[in-house]
Amino acid sequence: MAQSGLACRTGRAIAAALLTLLAGCAGGRGGGDSGLGPITLATGRDLTGYLQHVLDGWNRLHPGQRVTLIQLPEAADETYVQMADSLRAGSSRFDVLNLDVAWTSEFAAAGWIEPLDRGRLPLSHLLPSVTSTATFHGQLYAMPYVTNAGLLYYRKDILAKAGVSPPRTWAQLSDDARTIAPRYGLQGYAGQLLPYEGLTVNVTEAVQSAGGTILGDEGRTVDVDSPAARAGLAFLVDGVRQGWIPKAALNFKEEESRRDFQAGHLLFLRNWPYVYDEANAAGSAVAGNVGVVPLPGENGPGTGVLGGSDLAVNVHSRHPQTARDLLAYLSSEGVQRQVLTEGSLAPVWASLYSDPALVRRYPYLPVLKQSVDSAVPRPKSAHYDQVSLAVAGITSEALRGHLTVDEASARLARELTAIVHSG
Image 1 (cartoon, one colour):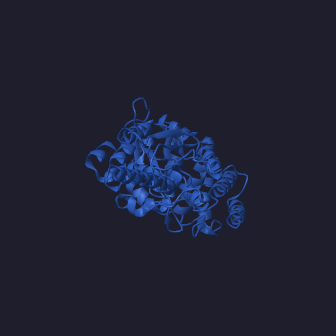
Image 2 (cartoon, rainbow, N blue to C red):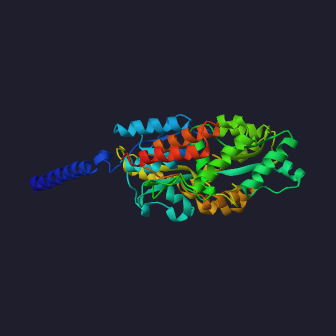
Image 3 (cartoon, rainbow, N blue to C red):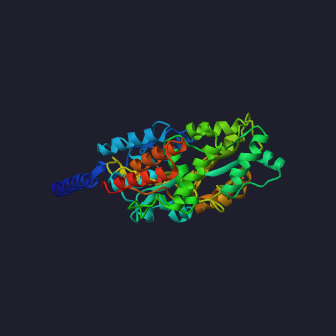
C-alpha cells in the first residue's frame, strides 16, 4: 500500500510537471505564464507628467505585471521613426504602443500590431466617431485612448469690444482677422504651418471643411486635385498672402502657436483642447478672456480631423495578455477621467462630456464633443508617413509663395498617386 501510494503520488507529480511544461509551450510569446508578466508602454514625451501616475495605479494593483513607461521624443515624427524601426526589426522592446491615430492603419497593414477582440474592450462607452481611428479594413487593431479635434480659440474681450460674434465661416474669420485684429494691435489667425505632421492636419481640415478629401476608399484613391480640395488649400494660401495669417505662423508647431496666442499676440488660434487650460492659467496674458468654438468652414461649421492616440499591442510582445489587459484598464472610466483632469487631454469615454462637475471645470467640453462628433480621421493609408510628408512638403511650398494653388494640387496628386500605387 505504501509503495502504491508513493507510485500514485509520483505519477501525479509527473503528470503535474507535464501539464506545467505543456502550459509553458502553449504560452508562446507569453513565456510559460499565458502571456502575463511585466511589460513596457512606449509613448511620445508626456508633457504634463500625468501618465506615470496613471501607470502607478496599475502597478499597485498588478505587482507581478508592472508596466515600465518608455518616453520617446516630443516630436511626433521622431517618435514614429523609433517605433517603426523597432517593430520593423521584430523587437519586443515595446509591448504596448501609444500611437498617433494617423499611424494605426499603417502599422496594421505592416503586420506590426495584433488584431483585437472587440468584446474584451469597452467600445460601447466611447464617443462613436473615435473607433474609426483604430480600425483598418474593418478589423479593430487598437484601442482609442485619447481623442482630439481642432478648436478655434479667440479673444472674448476683443470680439466683445468689436461687437461681433465668434466666426462660423471662413469669410467671417478672414474679415475679422483682417480688420478687427489690427485695431487692437494683434495679428489675425495662426495654426500649425511648419512643414510637419501639424501642417498635414491643418491642410486636411481646410480641405474637408470645403467638402473635399485628400485620399478616399481607405487610401486607395487620390482625390486632392478637385475644386473643393483646391478651395481648402486656397483658404490658407490666401491668408498668408493677404497678411491676416502672419508669416511667423509658417514656423509654428503646437507650442509655438500656443505661446503666441497666450502672450496676447493673436486674435484667433487653431489648436488642440489642451491649450484651454494653459491659456487660462495664472500668468497668462489672456487668462479669463479665452473663448472657444468649433472650427469654421467654407459655408458654415468646418469638419475637423480626429487627433489623439490609440493603444496597440506589438505582435512580438513578451506578455500579450497583460498588454491587452492594460488596454482595457487605460480605457476605463476612472483612467479616462484622469486623462482629462490630470493630463488636460480629451478622453474617449462619452459620458464624461456631460458630467456636470467636469463641464463646470472645463466649459469647452460641449464644444469639443461637437467637434469630435463631426470630425473624421486623417487619410488612411498603408504608407501614411509618405502621404503626410508629401502633403506637408508641397503645401508648404504653396504657403511660402513658391507654387500656386493649382500647381501644388496637381503636383500633390501626382506624388500621392505614386505613393498609393507603390505597394
